[in-house]
Amino acid sequence: MLLPLASGLSRWVGRRTRPRLRWAVLVTVAVGLLVTLVAVTPRAAAAEPLLPPPPSQDAFYVVPSDLDARNGAVLDSRPVLATALSVPMPARSWQIKYRSVDNHGDPSAYVATVLVPLAPWLGGGARPLLSYQPAEDGVGLKCAPSYGLRAGLGLRAGLLTGTNNSSLETTLIAQAVARGWAVVVPDYEGPHSEFGGAAGYAHGVLDGIRAATHFAPAGISRSAPVGLMGYSGGSMATAAAAAAQPDYAPELTLAGVALGGMPADLKATMLRFNGSAVGGSIMVIFAGLDRSYPELDALQYLNQAGRDAVANSQSSCLNDASVKYPAASLATYGARPDIADDPGLTRAFAHASPLNYPGTAQAPVLFYHSVLDEFAPIEKMRQLAARYCGDGVRVHQETSAAGEHGVYAITGSLTAMDYLRDRFRSQPAPNDC
Image 1 (spheres, rainbow, N blue to C red):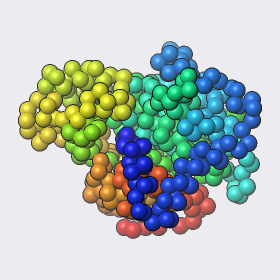
Image 2: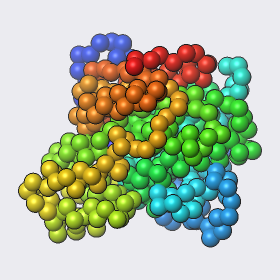
Image 3: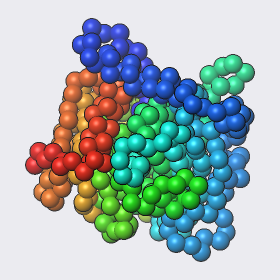
């Protein structure tokens, strides 16, 4: 849900902001574009064509018929060139396909990208592993983070054609690589792009960590400290994994979790999109809800025009739908004028909302959130933080007026990674509860 990032960044940097905040933006953006130029070998730069085929045309993404393996088992792998906005990162990178369980409880094969910095780890102990969940935010495989990491800005014939929402966060992944951390980036929506499917999210993330630590060429120690990080839509997948870890992957020990721009209540976020410049996002949200939870019949809350628009958005990312259906609203596409207040719609959205995820995280958690966030209401994040506190989780909140939802993905990332750095060093986690 990082659609407004580019436009928001250009507006915010141009304002009369404090020099330190402007510097934070410039440093964070630059680290993905300048640091990644260091130590990139000619062999890596020539490893693949400028714009790889989309996942729908790539046999690597096909789910094999034989899934008789443990969860997290690596089924296939290949070296790839991972980029930050089309600039190669200084890391050895692979795509791995691994066994997991989808949102419906069926065995499946997910894809993740594993990055290991070329520079040796000098920080003491095992090199840390960060599982970074970008805002996949779509119902088509072209929205997958693995594709955004390879295709970047979508350079074709000298033009920037764009790829997907996830590609905007590749500079943040480059920041983690620059810190010397290994990174695993899962396509946590799975091969059927089940946007909003909490259980599938959790399995995809946790089995991605298992697969990364079992993938011998990466050389990631199974004793490495592991952190989780995600912003916006990525924070939903991160929260699902943190809550499910004690039961689903008890052998994993998480050092810390960073949740940014958290849409704790998906319906509240959908209503913020409603009628806005990115109102077409509603179509992808309903498509994802219907795909992840077909038993809820989410489309009953739309009129025929709304159902047609959802049918026409079955492979869209949020940005695609926003262009296709500008300023879309429930007033136009809802089954009734008052559909936003329907209790059934509220219950349907609860399945995909972090406020209602089952389970409790064991690792300490950071919430970082802009008080100016226009898409993820901060009061909903605070409700979730209070619930975590009630469950005994060590919770720390960092809030800031440094930009709205999209811009704070950048300005807040330094805070998030510093928090995880301290957890990797086994420093006591701050607790605001």
